Image (cartoon, rainbow, N blue to C red; front, side, top):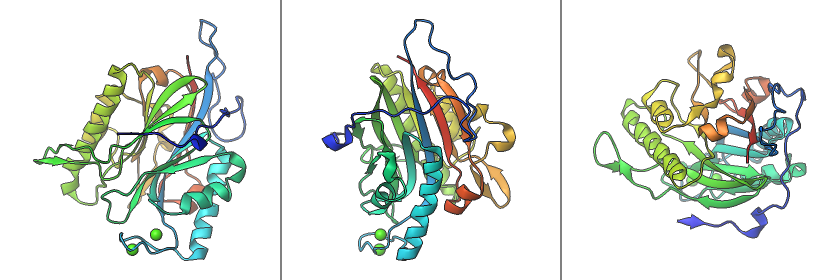
Length: 307
Ligand SMILES: [Ca+2]
Ligand SMILES: [Ca+2]
């Protein structure tokens, strides 16, 4: 099941965020504390964002994809690139990216060209529109595992699978392994989806627990869980030992989506305690730039990865 990336993804240099108040809206207080044993943490800035229907301008005959005009695609790439470039993250988990398309190339070779990113998208899955999760990174990625073929119990009966891949990848953050799970669970559009979404969250929690049990203490889940804090799906993740990193975001700013005028949080960043204790700053960014680019707000976080 392990799919190793080509050597081009094994980047030589880890770029770390700059400490201090750099005007990006993140709370940078209390970031410079070193662990008491004198070991130096590695700072990594991560972002997760559902970028809403990031389709290219080619009609894929095998999927029911949206087809952007060249102008629409250029605008989308520009708008997404402007936001990502502003925060200059080392790693970006993306959701709603057309699989097997050229949209990430356009982003990485276009507005993010100076960022030193490589990109990766999940392969084709069962989503009828062909959207999937993806990432861009300048942190070395040493392993990528797909869970697209995983089957697990559905509380409504039988078995089910991830609607979009639960992409599982290992970052090398200054010599320290960090496993990142990128999630995009089934939406709430239909009440009949609730069981499968809970099944997906439970299965993702199981993946995290298996990683921890096999000696990987640093596990982070990023993505669009399509459900709110306190929901069964959310509870399946926190019940698996993952801590909600957004709890330190002020209440009035803790929303990533507006549904019929109501602010709600569908997008999440959860981590094992080993990683959570290195949280140096986190922000959910709702502003005209993010709203122009997507209907979801990105989450940006700075982590001190401790040896
Ligand atoms: Ca397409
Ligand atoms: Ca098509």
